[in-house]
Image (cartoon, rainbow, N blue to C red; front, side, top):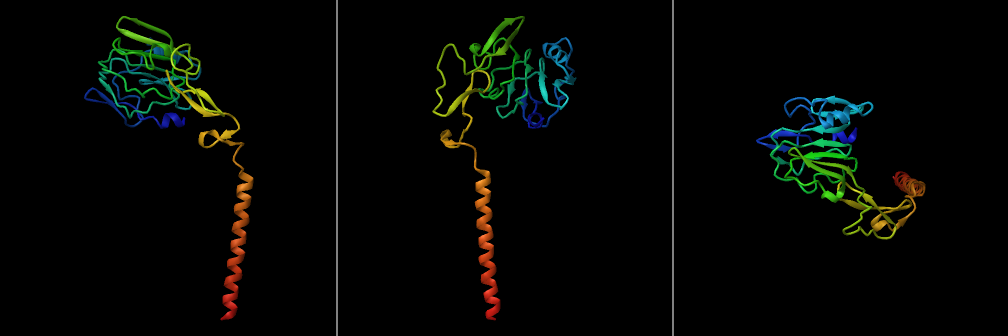
Length: 219
């Protein structure tokens, strides 16, 4: 739900898509059940179609059908929700995609694009890439940490590789490690920290009380 509320969605202005309020009706028309995103939505338990969006019961957006919306550019500041699983951008005069537009979208499994636009992360980031009838379809995102070719992400000691969207990965601290370069072992000692803080606070309060009491007696 938080991801959906953070979405800066889709204001169509002069052929551009800019960040704006969460609104599934800004692109004219309704999502059709016969569209790929619509069929995926209908097949998902607890999902429903809301204008151009597919949402689940918590109002989290999992699908966007933006085909034929006269979109020429996508605002690089547009924040897509991490819950997004399918998006259709076909039949639009798109010129390119911002390079980091789909970073962090590890749940994305389907994207339809104009034929002149490459799949996010490259064809190697997807298990299936098909071009036909004026549309390029990228399906089934590959795990960015299990690459069969290209440069492998080398994570430092005490960290692990984690997917970070199509063709992307990142290093995260292994369980039991945290902090700068994952050098801190174990969880943060909350009990010790607050115990010391409480002791120092009580000591200071006693000292201040004694000091103020001496001053009162001296007068």
